[in-house]
Image (tube, rainbow, N blue to C red):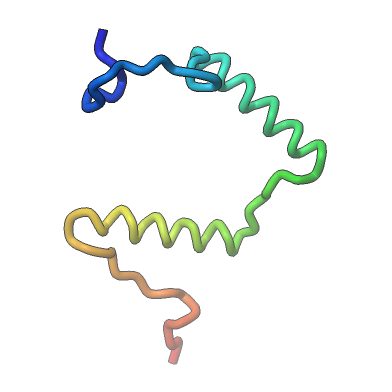
Length: 80
């Protein structure tokens, strides 16, 4: 049977988290997220962080073919 990474010559056995089936991985990750929120260490994005991440993602998506997608920040537009 072909390994997930077909470019590697020796077949490698998955270990640890990667060896679990996807449903079990999802359940463990969900429990970790809940625990982080209960503990108070989970990161929650502010609206400013979310906006910055969206801009960054849009730039990265366009960079594959024709370079970054030009955009203008609303704060930089002169209203006069």
